[in-house]
Image 1 (cartoon, rainbow, N blue to C red):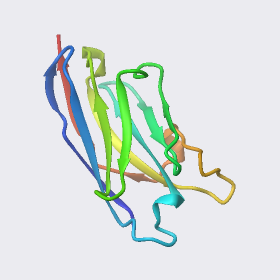
Image 2 (cartoon, rainbow, N blue to C red):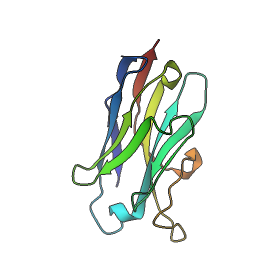
Image 3 (cartoon, rainbow, N blue to C red):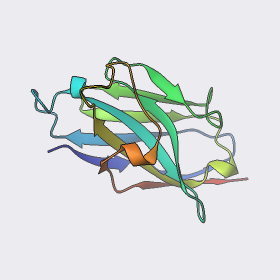
Length: 134
């Protein structure tokens, strides 16, 4: 089965950068091949709901929330079994617990589709904290 583990969080000053990593295991081919899944990054600030900020489809298509467009980049290194989130120009409002997630595509979901909806994901990591000070 697919499992996820985030790392790379920390404390930075406003304007700084961080790269989060999501180490994956279980993508062993067949029904557990990369082509069967899309992945995403979410964040949850204190007292707020979980927000989908970036997703990547099986074909590499990416989508971003308006709040991070142009500052964050999601990427997948299949050889390293790792999903990344490169974050630049971080601001105090980016302070949150960040999660990666994976979801198997249904037979009716296109290869180029990905989602940023919490309810669409069954597989989650444990989270990594990002704190941005002004």
